[in-house]
Length: 224
Image (cartoon, rainbow, N blue to C red; front, top):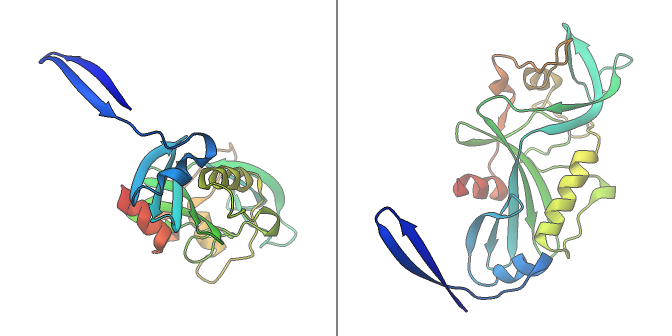
C-alpha cells in the first residue's frame, strides 16, 4: 500500500510517496514487527522504546519522571529518609513521591525471552548507567518483584511492560536485597525530605550510585 503526501515549504512544494506494509494491530503489533529485522524502535508505543534480537530476546524501556516509594521511613538530623525497616522502633509507614535531581534520568526496563521476564530500574548520570541505593534491587539493577508480581512471559512485551510498571508503582519497598554496598548511608545521600516535605539532596548524592553493566542497561545506553 502506498500513500502520497504533499509537503509545502518555503523552498517549494514537494511530493513524497510512502510505502507501508500492514503488520497487525493491538497488543500483537510488536510481536509481528520484531519478526522483520533486528532494530531499536524509539518511542514505539505510549512512551515505550523497544528492541529485538531476531525475536529471541526483546526489550522495552521508558523514562520515569518520579518514583513512588511506599516503605518505612525514619528521621535523621531533621531529614526524613527511607529506612526499609532497618531502624527498629523509630520508623513509620509512609508513601512519598521522589523526583531525581538534575542530571539524573531514571529508566524502567523489561527484558523478555520465551521463558523468562526480568524487570530493571536504572539511573543514568553523565552518560553512564547506575543502580540506585534502594533495597529491592539486585547488583545489576534487576528489580525483585516478589512472587505475587512475577510477569507472564507468554504475554506480549508491551502488556508485560505496562503491567510490570503498574505493579512496581503499587508495591512497597523493603530491605531484602540490601548489602554492604547498598546501605542506608547511601540512601540518605539521594532520598530525603525536610520538615516542609521538600526534597533534599546531599552535595555528594552521586556517591550513592553504583555503576552497572548488563544487557538491558547497555541497550538503553546504546539507544541514546
